[in-house]
Image (cartoon, rainbow, N blue to C red; front, side, top):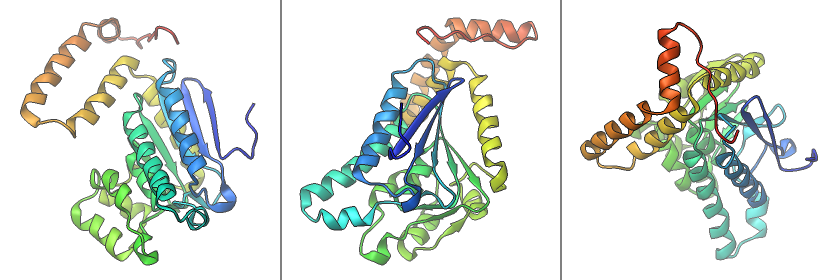
Length: 264
């Protein structure tokens, strides 16, 4: 049984794992322990065939995640400690990308620095209308280098330059226009919107969801035209599976498909 003082909480219900950064008094800032715990939870999801999507959120009312815990950085000034921390953040972002099922971030309040990058790394980013996205690192002599990787995948160069070089912050609606956010809702409606999106995801074929997530990751890494042909082969193989057969039959019979996951 998890205790409320744990920096990260996780709960699975109805095929959805909700992972909560549980440091509300510090605006859910990231310590190395917190980052490693988040990565561990995502690893558990990767080995859980019954999980169909993940929700990532922050506890409390003020923030999704306000970035690194600067007090911990100050207390660990040696190069090895700094490399270990920033390396763990990079590993966490990679874990979000490599998680085999969709990861949905539910963002309210501040999403700054590493928190902004973490929200950007998720497949679907839902934002309350009070959300604020920003990269304040340069104002304190740091640079948002690790989080530039996920942010560059959803923001244009000019928008990213404005945030990274000037510290300009984006409101939820500005982030939506820039491509950082999937959808904006009123703050009281955020939980309901998260449930709706997760319900939609859980209605899809589990194997097709995983195949789509893997393909999205690979698309960004592979040479375009040869990989286009490989994706055609992957599509053909997927279409021969039991879930595709069930989905096609259900469509023809005008009924909802029944997904059965082995080992779930």
